[in-house]
Image 1 (cartoon, rainbow, N blue to C red):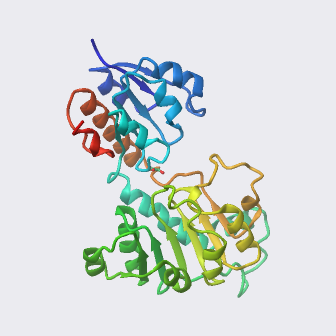
Image 2: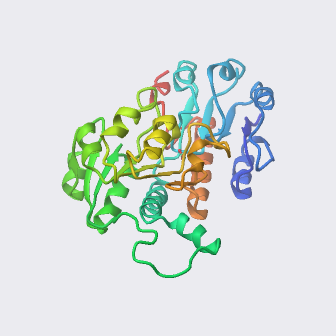
Length: 326
Ligand code: GLV
């Protein structure tokens, strides 16, 4: 009997084919709509494996209704959408896709930083609206990136790659992380600081930490008030790390200069969200890892992980190693 697998969104055909060689595959075929909860519940009642995205909330209630589930393969590096504790208690392997997306996400983080600093979106809109009358000395002036200070909150793979890019722009790089990374400090010429110093001294603050109960609203009113009023906040991690109401107020009151956001507390962000009314905010629809090559690599790694778990092997990028000893 082939194991039963449910895939929650259309993924590349060749990847589906690879899974279907060893599994009975069912898939949610809509591209623009996430699988409704009742459909997911029904499918998981009979599935041995789940291949899902960050849009699916895999909570305790759902796991209660998934008696056969052996593996949850998340096609994302972040796995805050999954109740890891409950999954682990039940011996369900959870896997993610780190590594393959790090360079692409570091590129996007840097692109967003530059776009926000130099007001690229606002400038493009200005031109298209026919407002460009003449070259003018102070027209659409922004912040310099080269030679400025970058503060990275969360020095994982992506954080290190952002630091590397920053060095090409002669930036002074500070970081804050749960643990110090001495090798990275030496190799990349970056400096560890406490959070307060990082916020006070950085011209650009980049959030690249995982979203957990400890990092929820890590950046709130107090933290924003410590930042320079010329500073730019960049978030390409998870929306919930920033208190959006506090961010809106800080931007409105010019306590900080601008923000570049690829992620939001609620996604997709409501079109009437107050942050979207501000011209000093650059917003993107969670596209950090969205390059053709990287999305293919993520889809493949997620498939490899799923199949390894179902065939009795240890998946390459297992999140909850504690399940192996069970
Ligand atoms: C995207 O946000 C991811 O976690 O891969």
